[in-house]
Amino acid sequence: MGTAVKKTISLPPDLAREAEAMAHAEGITVSAVIQEALRQKRTARLKKEFRTIQGYWSRLAEQKGVLKEKDLERLLKR
Image 1 (cartoon, rainbow, N blue to C red):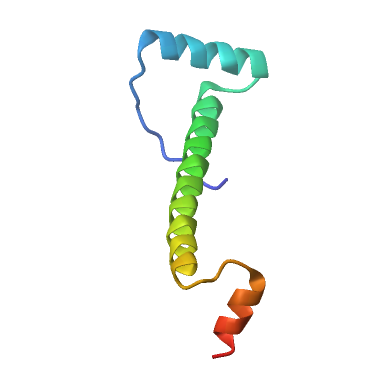
Image 2 (image 1 turned 90 degrees about the vertical axis):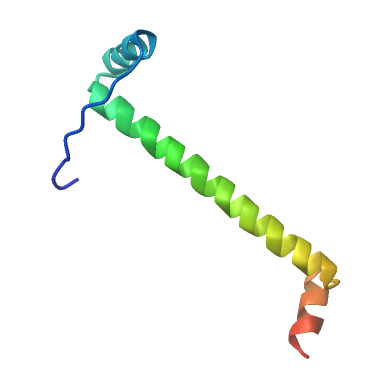
């Protein structure tokens, strides 16, 4: 992983207990639990951004009459 950057975070008591319980149950550190949660949040955000971009291009393609692969091939031959 390289070097780690230490950060201090504040958690509500219930989340702190849950993070500690998860760490204990999985045999990992609380830090690893938080890291995984952040990775999952990043993945969800990127998927949402991708769907937004995909939706934009899908709407644009539909406006241009590109509904099937044949339509795209026809448009690209112009």
